Image 1 (spheres, one colour):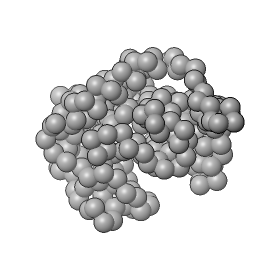
Image 2: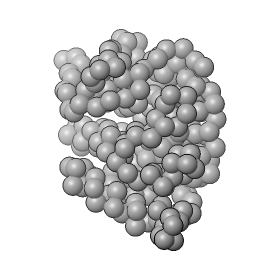
Image 3: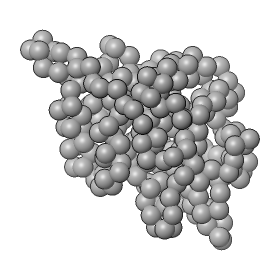
Image 4: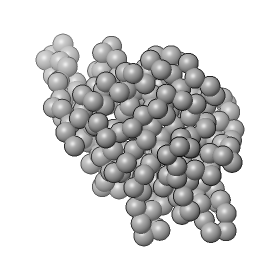
Length: 231
């Protein structure tokens, strides 16, 4: 898959803020924060995060922070993206299989989908805000990631027409996901989602085991709310 070359943005001293060096520092920080999967680190190193944020925030693209992308939405901090993808891969490593077909709820600017596409053969992403999705599609095409399929729809409903999925990642926080959503995950599959309200959320792994769904709390996080409908 093609990924365009970086276009460094210079600060007042002429140093490239979005250079490969800045991305390498992000990877070093992710390692220090406990991200150990080489596939995840390679994917994060490859995708130019600064091209997925508005120009006014590009000098902050490789900081470990969420940044606004419009419509009261954010691009998740790098650690959250890396940890989410790592949790999916760890699940399938334990199962002795792989995540071939992944559903993402909350396309946003397209960054997490781009990272997933470096690792998983099929990525399907759903976004409820039409204008956000249009921008994400442009960015993904610019990166040569035409294989990612996207849909303007209510992400809480998943993408039933294309189910089942091996895995799903949810980029917005809610109190619960519906049984209809979980029904779209194949046996042996996994869902990684933030669970909670506006005050407290926990990144949670849901595993589809032969004896039923088993969940594991991983870390405290804070995402934008998971909303229904389309806009």
